[in-house]
Image (cartoon, rainbow, N blue to C red):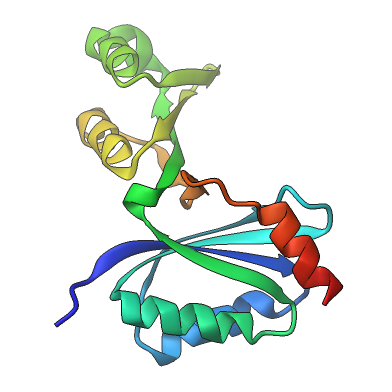
Length: 176
């Protein structure tokens, strides 16, 4: 029996209303949970890129990518395992300002985690951390005892390690 792995699916699309809903239904019908979702511009003008992270089998991910590519606005979809990609997430932590000065350990935590303070106000300061999910979770665990006012983490962003002539592949797809 095939084992589950973490896959990163990249979907290059025209930017049309309703596409996200249709793509999410593909996962819903197969009872596959989306672990992370990020949508942004791509390296090609007027083409968006969805980065979707799922935990499933290769058979299912192949099937899902095939279904996604049947959507009219989808130009091309790819999938990769973690070892084939370079990926990061970003997180912001909002913490009470008095802790920055009253709790010396907070400054050590920020320094040791390679985080940075992006803003400081009278009532709060905000820490930014880019890294793997495990690094962000570790920072969260260290800051939690001090009190986190707000926390947000982005979806995964990734690029493939292998040379992919994505631009030329997509331009070919757009022409056909």
